[in-house]
Structures are given as C-alpha cells and as structure tokens.
Length: 363
Ligand SMILES: Nc1ncnc2c1ncn2[C@@H]1O[C@H](COP(=O)(O)OP(=O)(O)O)[C@@H](O)[C@H]1O
Ligand SMILES: [Mg+2]
Image (cartoon, rainbow, N blue to C red):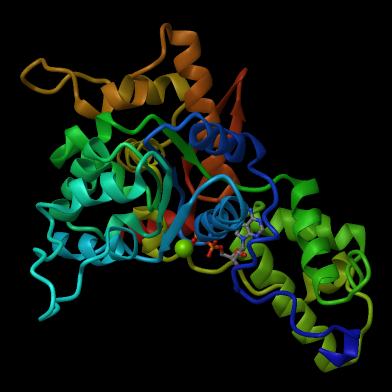
C-alpha cells in the first residue's frame, strides 16, 4: 500500500473496535440496556453488518471501567458443560487437585459459586455467533442468568436465531429486554467509514476517493458495511495496478463488476419479516404494500390466521401503521437490491428483483 502512502491496507475485513460508525440509535439502546443492568440484550444482523465489531467495541468500553469482569466469547459453547469453562476464571475450582477435597465446579454448583465470587460485583458477558449455540446451551445460559444476580449478557446472532427461539425456547426469548437490528449505513456514514479506515492507516481524509466516488460506492453497496469495504478494496487494487492516483465515479463505473449474483445465504439470513414479504412477492407476483399485507394475512383454508401475518403485524394498532412499517421493510429490501418497484397510479408496485427471483426458484 506504499503507492497511497498507507501503512497497510485500510479495507480488509478486520474487526477494528475503535471504528464503528452509524447505527447510533441501536448502539445507544444497547448501552442503555447494559447501564440499566438489563440481564439479556440481543443484537441481530446479517453476516458483515457489524455485530462482532460492535461487541468488541463494547468490550473495550466496559473493560476499562464499570465492570469487574468482561468476558467476550467468539462462539457460544456447543455443550452446556462448557459454560463451566467460560466462567471458570471467575468461579474458580475447575481443575481437579489431589490436595483439595473441594468438589469440582460443575453446571450444578456453578451459579452458587459465581454468586459467592462475584459478591455483588458485575460480570458483562458478550456472546458472539449465538445462533450456533445448541438449545441446551442456551437454556443453561438462561438458568445462569436467572440465578446469578451479577451477570449481564449481550448476544449477537444471525436473524435466524429468533425464529429458532420462537419455536423452541420461548422461556429464553421472554427474558430478552432489548433487541436491536444492525442495518445499512447512510450516505454520510458510508463516507465516514471510508474516511476513518483511511486515516487509521495514516492517509488523508477520503483520498484517493472523490466525493462522487463515495456517492457511487453508496449506490452500489446500499451502505452495507462489508460491501463498502469490498468495493473500496477492489477499486484501490485496480487503481494501484494501473498507476492511477484518483478514484472518481467514472473509475468505479468502468471497473464495476457486473452485478454479483446474490448468494442464497443472504436471503436465508434476512430478518423474518423481510423474508416473509420477499417470499410472498415471489409466490404472488407484483403488488402494492397494502395488497401485500392482505396477501400475507389471507386466512388459511381452515379459516385461521396465518402465523406469518401475526408476526408481521404484531405491534401495529391500525392499518395505517402497518402499511408504513411494511413500506420501511420494502425500502430495506430495495436498498439490498432484493426487490424492485415501479410507479402505478398513485402507488408503487413491488416485485422480487430478477437476480433474487432466479435464486428462489432454484432453491
Ligand atoms: N458499523 C460499522 N462501522 C465500521 N465498520 C463496520 C461496521 N459494520 C461492519 N464493519 C466492518 O465490516 C466488516 C464485517 O463486520 P463484522 O463486525 O465482522 O460483522 P458481523 O460480525 O456482523 O459478520 C469488518 O471489517 C468490520 O470492521
Ligand atoms: Mg461476526
């Protein structure tokens, strides 16, 4: 990266806890939740939306003051027994010793020992990739968090975990007091991410990018963090190869890769409501938002209301609010270029974007 006089490549997928931009409202909600000593909070988002970065920045923030113990684990224990190891440093007594008659720490005395050792102080537990936990392991985490006063847990997971919990572990879900979803960055936040990454390696502002290049990057990526980094990395590499020192919008258009085929993964990882909308559009074809609601909520053959309808409309008092919320969800899907719309009379009609439609058919 000497060409740009950078210490290293600014656009790797490395997690840099000091550089977390955007999602201000979501971050504040989580911090409030921790400060209010809520026992269980939940960060959801697709791969590359910034969950690990956010957890790591929380770790740094509270590691220095506020909590006696801060534990970050990059994956939850597969087997419930492994919670003993996770808390071993606090609870102690994990090792068998010939000199000690003490009973070894196990899942069954762990809560008592933790309470004794914490003795009123707090432990912040940050669990990444929580969707990989077995139900058994999550159930023990719930028990621990019920029985040990000082444990405050923040979990990060793919949206799929929520439906899994809804179906299998309501007891757990009921204890989640705060839930935030990480979404795309705005245009100015996109600029900020690029600027801070560049300055972090000794560069100057957004150079070599021009402002209209930033606009083009935003258009292309919809403000999705991982895609912003990828696009910047590709263009910087290409500029380097060609000895070009300024990257403008034109450069990006010339070097734009053809629209990438979207991995099926990213459809599966959508939050439940967005996925329901996408699948309904796929099944039923082009619709306005209110037609879409009617379609999702069409009664089953036996007259009952579909579960998808309940979860879509759960918290909306009236139809107007419901339409507004569905509009928001559709906007997000548009940003991720999963749906397209066209004007039809006064309303917009939405349909599944071709590159996603082909995927859903083959799935
Ligand atoms: N809001 C953000 N601000 C700054 N960088 C971000 C943000 N979201 C994601 N990134 C960067 O994008 C990449 C993927 O983020 P990561 O935290 O690993 O996402 P996840 O854990 O959700 O898969 C990392 O390099 C990370 O630093
Ligand atoms: Mg992660």
